[in-house]
Image (cartoon, rainbow, N blue to C red; front, side, top):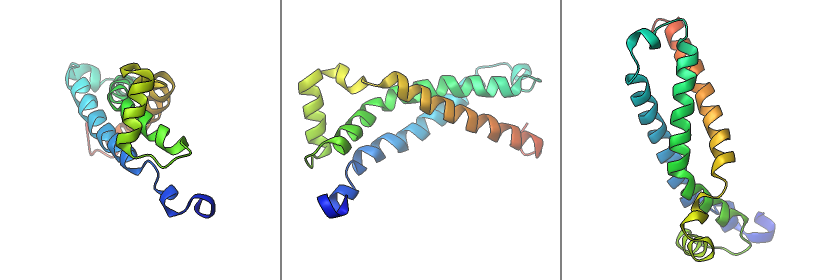
Length: 136
């Protein structure tokens, strides 16, 4: 990429990526905490805790993915475009071509991928913390 498109191509979509990833993590943790807090203590500390943690992770992942989907569409559009578009140019183009629905293209596959990865990671984290006695 560097040889054909220059240094700028190496950072293509960086702004949109940051606008997607930083909020995803924060939103995910917020939804995860709220989902677990809504459940009775007996459920979250039972033998089914791994399943409960995984389920909370799935719900949180879907919600966080949907909220951050527009930034992912913009990032992908910038990175696959042959021209050097700014984030603003990509947003304008997507809106003009497909309207608001264009910002949610690919939401289902992305949501499945991000959700399952995050849910598995949080389930393992919760189990390790419980086994080490650092979290109940």
